Amino acid sequence: MALGPPGLNPLDDPAAIRSANRDLLSLALLDARNHLLQMLAAFDGPQIDPAQLGPAWNVALRSPAWQAKWLLAERSKIQPEVGVGANPCLVDHASLRVWMSDILEASLDRLADLPDEPAASAASATLAPFHQAVLHEDRLGEHLAVLLQHSSAPARSQRPALWLPAQRWTMGSMAGSAESPAVPCNEWGSELVAVPEFEIDAQPVNWSQYAEFAADGGYDRPELWGDAGWAWLQAQPEARRAPRHVAQFAGSVMVQRGARAGLQRAAAGQAAMHVSRHEAQAWCRWAGRRLPTEPEWEVAADTAGSRGFVWGDVFEWVAGSARSYSGAGVAPDFCVDKPPPASSQGVLRGASFATRLRRHHPRALRFKSPGHDLAVCGFRSCAL
View 1 (cartoon, rainbow, N blue to C red):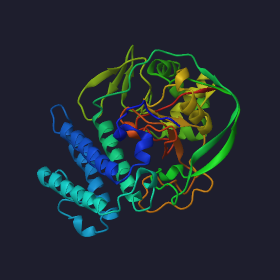
View 2 (cartoon, rainbow, N blue to C red):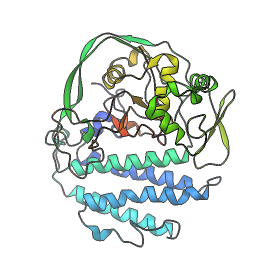
View 3 (cartoon, rainbow, N blue to C red):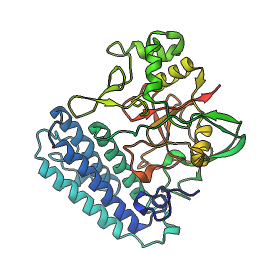
């Protein structure tokens, strides 16, 4: 599977980072930390809601705490006055930055002490926690970018839906912990599935399409939501008439932008975001369509890019519940993406504009509750 154009920086290449050796992992850890610090610096700027500063630092502090626990195997590095349990609003942020730097330096020293293995052998269990450390820090940087909302998905011209032929497709990354610990834990194992022919949107549902649903009374029609979706909608603290952060639908969509004050207009051709799976399913029922299955989404993402299938603007809800693939084995405690023990979680596929490029892999997935709308999540649809 070819990912990324020739000459792509290995730090941005999803395939390269999954087979990274000790040297590339060191660079990735530094790159991920620099990105995290850039996000934190943005929260120190003007027009930032002060109430978001504490949450931002709380997010950032999870990274050194994780590294101290799983890479250094010593809890003594986690000082209560500056580490886990600290109130970032009451602690000097300069001290917190020093603590973050100390933990990163110790982690890099520990990595440098490991045997120097070629890239082909980089899947050894000794490097697995460091692969997870990069993934963990990338996730935290992504979360800060979502809080900040200083960028957004691009507006795209509408493209016609695509028909894909029936085929057999292997789900999962065909590896377990012993063979490929660098692969995210929720991709372990493999399953061969039959995928009938299907029609799928070339891009996620955009604000213009979603606004039609809202204007047609979509939030007032229980027959579109199902029992679970309607119960979720009625349980929202205010009468919900749009996805999270949307103030109103009028021409261009008015959207509240995270930590920054004021409203910004989201272009009509931008992918709808911060949409729960309940909302995505209600829209699909209204439009006479359905969410894609996991295999359908992955087949299209992996094979139909040259035909106009666009993904990576927003995470995308798919049909079905979270589960492990056959032969997945037991994930170590340090794994970032453990499959949930029950099937109450929904599945998000792909990546978003806030996701680092090295995580834009067609097999990547996340597990969230159907009511989740904090992440940059949207959806596309398939013909019934």
